[in-house]
Image 1: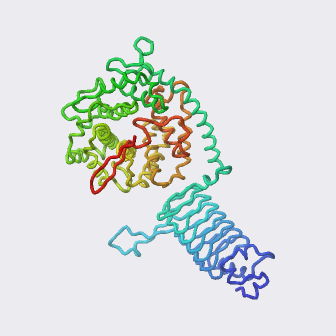
Image 2: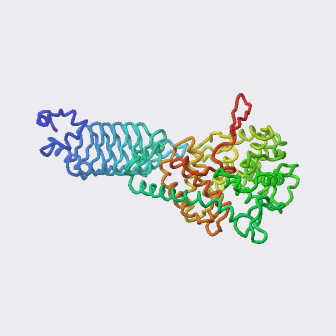
Image 3: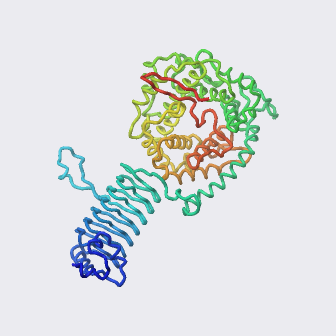
Length: 583
């Protein structure tokens, strides 16, 4: 054992070396007195493999089944190392750290005092058997290179911490940490990406990729700004090969979705929203003619907007109908197009305004949340938008308070969803249904989501399962229904924001690369470019840019169905719902 006299030549007290072993690791003149004997004892007892200039404090408890320590690494006094431990080169294990179970550290890892890394867990599944008799489960812990684990942090079994990450003091890490992350909290969540901390230089491949995306985005913005009027003209309806007049024709509309397509209500609304996004709604046609034509689409008795040729509305206009979806979606499409033109529907949506709270709740409960959560969410979107139109233009908020009350009591806190995964479609049904539901409620009225962190986890898992919709299941609906929820959650939480940043940047790069010169975007691969695809994908680009860097510099802001700003807000005061309009 080293004595004070042995250490005197280094002019550092023995107690200080035990607590600050770098004095020993980097001492001039070779071996630190007593360390050869200490290492020999540990090797004899544990069969350890120890690298060059390893320091093992005599005040550390080392009772490992296996131990591997790389060059120039040290274990300070008060530490407890047991079971199966691997430590890379140039690591520092500071005083009173505990590492147990199966733990592997990369090179250059710093573990601050009083941190605990437990690479095993007790089994406690059977409530009738004492926990100590149920055995252990061991997945192990893996720490990448160049990681700093702060004081009093706890890393749990099964966790991998990516290279170059920082774990804040007191954090409890229960899930994998992506490389370059700064995490903190209980349980720990990603707070930031270290590569984003410097505005200039650095950042490796990811930063270079984002820089390349920025250049491509600039070129894309220039092209879209010059070409969007031509996209409108390309889709103006024709009868004999000549462009239609600025007005509209009978009940058929002034636009088709794609050249050669059938005239319909929605393409005209998409054209209005697209022009309005660039601040020029008049580019879609004569305002007076368009307003009059849109208002004529409304059924005065119900307030719905059926598409010509749809089945009759029937006895129950609120029934969920998959073969006549537009008559309810038309509340969104036509209602917002009218607002984009500075106008309003002629009539309230009476079939919504006349429904009492008990009837609404019964209808919500009867929706097919387990099997068809997407259509169920679209029904809520229709209802919320109907209330918005009734409130804003006709002074009625009937059904709003009951709707938000139902939503608050039916949401799954573990997923943030209102629907369950489908046996064939997986998470597609609940995630897409979540987008439609929250678009017409929480987003539309500026209300905070109830479980945003759970939503991020669910949506991210869905996106990962589908390869972020780059090579499979890619459509404007599927991508928007992922991007908008993440964008909406980001207004409340930074949960996993840094982790998802590169995937979102890749989605943006993939999207802007699919613009067809002079034609716009196709709704999905293999389809022709048209108005619906162009309007929706430009909304997606706006949300992605806003998530990544802020969209203030873009020359368009989505209007209508996909507008990012709330149409109104809900304030609850002593059980009373009060609406405050945002013009």
